[in-house]
Image (tube, rainbow, N blue to C red; front, side):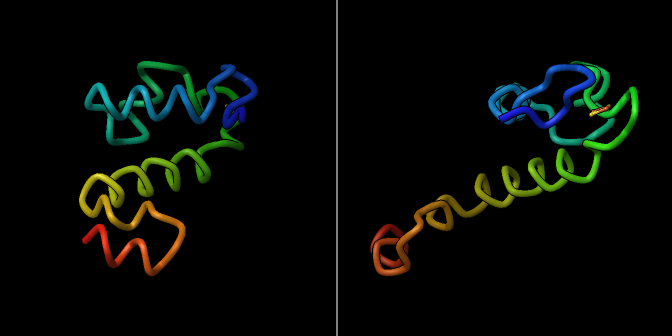
Length: 73
Ligand code: FES
């Protein structure tokens, strides 16, 4: 899914950038252009980065089923 239509940045692009060490909106903007034109995408891009940070800190939180989440933890 596209997050930033102006710069054609997808969720996968953000995940890839996060995997390469990008964890702030400013860094994402400088690497991809996300949020640098109209700015409509900034809030969602920030939420996506926050979600990735949270998942990285607590991998078991990614599982959609609570029982299996507990089993993973
Ligand atoms: Fe991202 Fe416009 S949608 S800058």
